[in-house]
Length: 64
Image 1 (cartoon, rainbow, N blue to C red):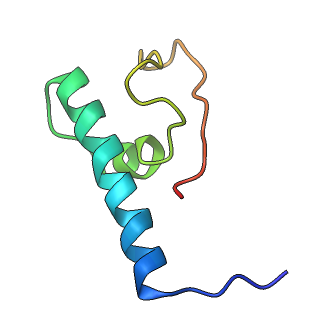
Image 2 (image 1 turned 135 degrees about the vertical axis):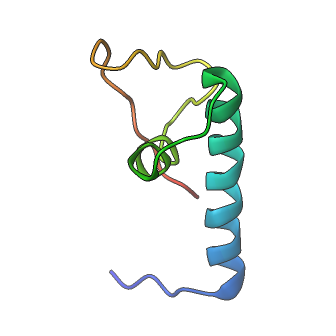
């Protein structure tokens, strides 16, 4: 399977990641570390998923 990358597709992926990170940043009330940005940028439900460090499992979803 070949996935062709277009500028529009890349912009969509990064925009969705920025939206998810804004939700998480607001929920936590603090800036995010690089590791958190990588992980939380892939959350399936950034608004409803528990984010307690070390106490929960995260559900990851696609960016597109």
